[in-house]
Each structure stands twice: as C-alpha cells, then as structure tokens.
Length: 80
Length: 199
Image (tube, rainbow over all chains, first blue to last red; front, top):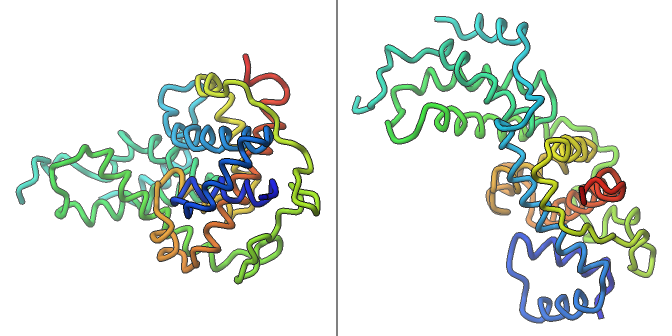
C-alpha cells in the first residue's frame, strides 16, 4: 500500500512519463481510496493548464511592458 | 534569399517598437526579474539582427523573435544554474525523498490534507489568479522555478532539460515534484482557501 507521500510523487511523475504498469495500478487504488491524493491529482492537471495560459496576458488588464528607460537603453544598444 | 520579408523594412528598432512589450512580458513570466528580462529582450533583438539572413518566411516576425528569446532564456538559466548558491538547494545526488518534510509527517501522510478546489477552471478567467500564480512561482527557489518554466511553459522533455542543464533524470523528476507541491500549496493557501477560486 502506497503512502500519500509516495502516491503524490508518482502523480507528479505520471504527468511527464508513463508509469510502469504495477505502479500505475497501485496509484489508481490509492487515489480511489484517498480523497486528499485524488484532489492533488486534479490540482496538478489544473496547474499545468494554468501555467500554459500564463502567456495569454495580451487580453488581460494591468499589462506590464518595458519601462521608458529600459526601452531607450535597448534602443541605443541595438541602433544601426 | 528566398524570404518573403524585406530586410530593408526590418530593423531591431522597429522590432523593439512592435514586439518589445510582448517579448518583455514573455521573458518576465519566465525569469521573474525585470532587469534580466530587459537584458534578454536586448540580446534577442541583436541575435535576431545577426541571424536575419537565415530567417525563412514561414512564421510571423513575432513567432520568430519569440523562438530566439526562448533560446536566450534557456542560456540564461544555464548560466545562472552554476552561479546560484547552494543553500536551500538539493544536493547534486538527490535522494528521492529530499526536501518534502514540509508537506508530510514521518509516516508518509499529509501534514495538511490538500483540500478540494471545486471547479478551479473558472479562475482562469480572472487576471488576479494569474498574478497569484506568478507570485507563487516567484516564491519557489530559483532552480525549482526554472525547472517548472522549462517543463510547463517551454514544454521541454526531461531529456532536453537534462541536456541543457547537465542534470540527471532523477534530479529533474524530484525537483519538478517539489516545484509542483510548492505551487499547489501556495495556490491553495493564497487563492482557493479564501474562497476566491469559487467565485
């Protein structure tokens, strides 16, 4: 029987590469019985989606951009 | 040159005007530091200028500049990887269990049980959520933040990350795990637990 510590490690690992069959089965059993780890599984998937959307800031409000000083500094450095 | 782009109408200054803010934001999200992000924009424009003759007409100017910036970011991570102090950092040979005592009690159960977040996807409509996520990434140690960025934002494989940063796959796996656990906990306490996630 996996501990939550082991199960959460396998959950993270399974985000990146397929687990060996036995590990996968052990993990499914644990997640089925453990609400905390079941929450974590959903959260890791959500975290991935959220990270992928970090760049979509074009449509967001309070956008940051280059400061005027930085822009002028870069302009001088790249001027031809 | 069989490019559809007229080099005469391209110049680093023009790129700066048209794409400077975009490139800066792209870099800032990844390196978490304004002056580093500014330097990366400058390096990118200069590198793009000297590589202009290699550019094919396949992609948009912005896509092309962003691809160069991505490489510059990986270079920057590689440089900083060697310079970062070792305090709080995992040793070179990471035991699988390293650094997780903050989340678990000794018998392997959760110290604080992860909560239900309900339907978190509604948060993706809120700009404030992304500010919190950025903040949580910043709170990770720099190496964990960099690994998370390479994996989830640059979509690099373990092998690519290992090659770029000179790590072994166990290092990468353990550090990504720690990054995700840290982010999970941070989002829970700073966003979901005070009810903002269900708004």
